[in-house]
Length: 516
Image (cartoon, rainbow, N blue to C red; front, side):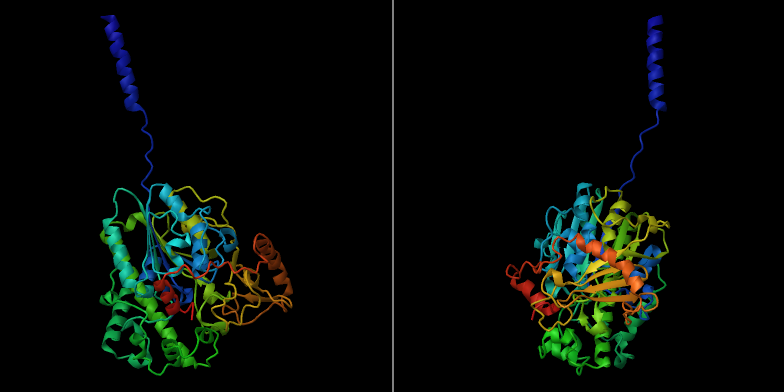
């Protein structure tokens, strides 16, 4: 009997010990990640960045609910290398994508690959030929859709497809969804009434008045709802805009190929300021159309109960020249802020609402930031760093930005900005919070431009000759970055060639102004 009692006592003590043992910590569920990139999207055309027009009520609301990074700089002023930097945390010499078309090597690990390995269901929906499946950016995506319907200029179809995907995804797993909107890109042909919203002759137009009123009312809302006009289909159709701008010579030259694209881009047409301003009106209308459809996606997140558990990041891939520095309606060929400074807004778990960050950051910092916010192991061997400390109200050391332009393009013989062939002819830049140094290679000796971005944000006064000391501080940084480029002096363009592109891709490139 004593032995039985002893056994019972020991068993009881063992059971008691098990009951009292602290249970293992259960890791919180990983947040979803929604990444939205928008083509040719300048920071200074965003309402919350100080623009005078109400072009982005939904993005501005997202900024109020999360963090706005006021000085985000792209690593290239054109899509494929810029997006490659965003996805890899490297500058173009690091990831090897130096032109378009080109292919990101399989050996380069991407944001999507890291998230997919961590159990995320991953999907991408793009509209741009340069982001086709063969670009290498499909690495890590279980689904990769590159639909060039309406030359990609149809934010409605992309937002509807994304909303359907969100509703039909596997709810048991976190998701990473990347969307790339193309609509603010040339030819700037948003549907009516977006096309006349800023036209001085349409101030009393009933539908324009209605759209203005709806977007004005959206400014103070905290929920998301697209206007009825977001359901209008877009497309590269000049008849959508020419009837409203029948005497604009730029639109007529573009629509009927009266001049080459290159002669228009490099201001060989002697257009009036008023004609240029009308294309800016159309560009802003395309931004609002895109923002309206961004509102649809954010509403879908809220309706599905995903808003609180999803990290949302919205960024421009690069900017757009609109007459500055001898360049119009394109972006590849210079390194001024109109083509490099982009909006970057992040909301979600781990982000302090209402945060406005003035410190310079790089677009390539987005990949390590999203991995950090998701609690996923970081990419290794990258140049970027996580911005999560800034998003939580903390601080980071100074972040220096580097960028390079496109090489000289055989498709645009009228270009007059790049003097040497291949990669060695690319412009290079180093940028700090205050100063920017640009190097422009030439056979007879390189040109240098130095700008004070605080006193001269429009980069109109080259101070290189006057402030040699400031340039001397930046030159070693630029030289060290260039020294790591394995193709620094190469005359190769880094281009894969257009032979493998299908007819629809070539037609899109013609519509967007890449080939002529």
